[in-house]
Length: 258
Length: 326
Image (tube, rainbow over all chains, first blue to last red; front, side, top):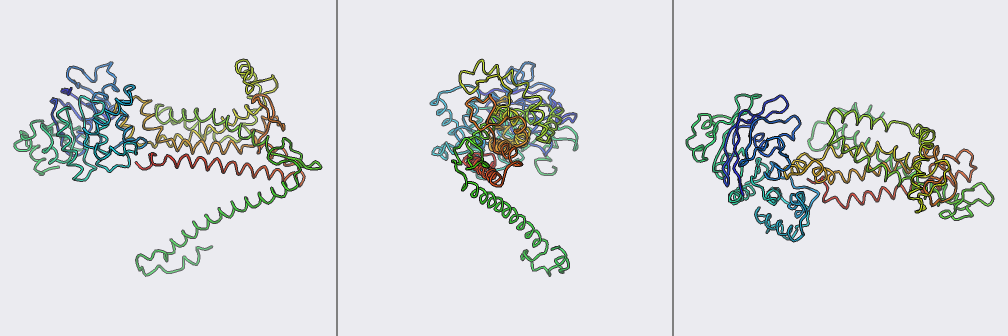
C-alpha cells in the first residue's frame, strides 16, 4: 500500500523567485522521513511539491521529476486532484472544517471520491478515528462540530481525515508546532504507529522530534536570504544526529548556527 | 464645544489604572454613548410618530385595514386596506430575491475564486458602479426599455406555463409585479454581490487548503470550505437586498401600472407596493389620506423588522458551525 518517492532535479519557484533548487532524494516506503533546516530553507515548499500543493499558490511552479513508484506526478496529463487523493497532507495549524461535525470531517474525503453506504462510512470513520487515537475521546459526540475539540484533538482529527481515504503517502507540515508537549507526544506516538502502513514525511523545527520519530533525516539549508534552499544531505537519522558527513549539518544540529 | 474645557485640564498626575478620569477616554465615552442614545431616540421618535398617525387613520377607517381591497381614504365614509399593497410588496420582493440571489452568489464566487486577477478587479468595479446608479434611472430604463422588451418573454411563459394561472398573460403592456420584480432583482444585485464577495474572499486559506489536500476539485473546495463559511454572510447580504427591494419606491412606481386588485397572474398589470402607493398618493392626499399612507408605512416598517429578525434567527441557529470560531 505504501509507496516510495524518488525526486530528481526538482526546482520550485514563486513567480520569478527560485525557492528551492535541484533537489534529489529517495523516500522509502513504510518509514518516517524528517525534513529539518532553518526557516526559509524551503523544506515546507519542497514538501508541498510532493503532492502538487505548491502550484496552488499564485505564481507557484515546479521543474523536475517526482516519481511515486513508477508514476511521474508531474507528467503531462496527470491530474493534480488525483495526486492529492493519493498523497495526504496534515498542516501546521489544525484545520478541521468548522462547518462540519467530527463525523463529517472524517468522511469528507470519502464523500469526494464517490458515494458510500452509511454503514461503510461508519466503519471508515471509526477505523480512521481509532487509527488517529481519537476514537475514545470523541465516540460519544461524533455529531458535534470539530472546532469544539482541543488543539491536539483537532490535529488528530485532521490526521484521521487524511488517513480515511487510505493515501499511499502522508505529508506532515510541522504538525506539532501549534500544540502543547502532551498533545505533541500523542501525535509522535501516532506517527510511530502510522508508519506501519504509510510512507510518512514530516517537516519539523524541533530537532529532538526529528530524532525521536524519524528513520531518515534530510537537512536543508540556504546560502543566504533570497537564495534558493538546497538539500545538504539525507541519511539515517542516527547518523545525521551523531556523525553527519557535512560540517554544516553538524553545526546546525549542535546549535552553532541558525 | 465640549472639547475646549477638557483640553485645559492638566494631564492627570497618573495614578495608573484609573483610566475613567483621562480626558481622552471621557470624551470618547461621551461621544459614543451620545451617538447610541441619539440613534435610539430617532428610532423611537419615528415609531411613535408612525404609530400615532396610524392609529388616527385606522380609527376613521370604515373598512377592514388588513383585508380591504380598496384605497379611498378621502371618500365618505373613508375605506382603505393594505391587503393589495402587502401582497404586491412581498411578491415583487420574493421574485427579486429568487432571481437575484443565485446570480449574485455566482458573480461573487467568480470574482473571489475563479476569475483571473486581471479580470476580477474590473468586474468588481463594474458591480460597484451598478450600486451607485440612482433608482429613478433604473425606473426610466425599466419603463422605456424593459417593459416593451418583456412582452415576448411573457408570451413565451404564457405558452408553456400559462395553464398554472400564475404565468397567464393576456398581451397588455408588461407593467406587472413580475416586471417590478425583475427590475428590483437588477437593483439589489450589486449589494448582494458585493457583500457576498467580501465574505467569500475572507474564507480562511487553511480550510481551502485542507479541502485541496483531500483531493477536492475547485468546485468541491468552494462547496466544502467557502460556501459553508460564507453562508451567514450570504444571508445577511440577501437581507440587505431584501430590505432595499421591500422599500424601493421610484423604480417600482415607474414600471408598475397600479390597481387595487390581487391578480393571480404575476404577468398581467396591476397590484401595488407600500412604497409605490405612498409615492403615488402622497401629493394629492388629504389629511386623513396622509395618515392612511403613514399607517401603510408602519406596516412596511413592521414587515422589514420581522424579515431582519428572521434572518438573525437563521444565522444564530448555525453559529456553532460557523467559521467564526475556527
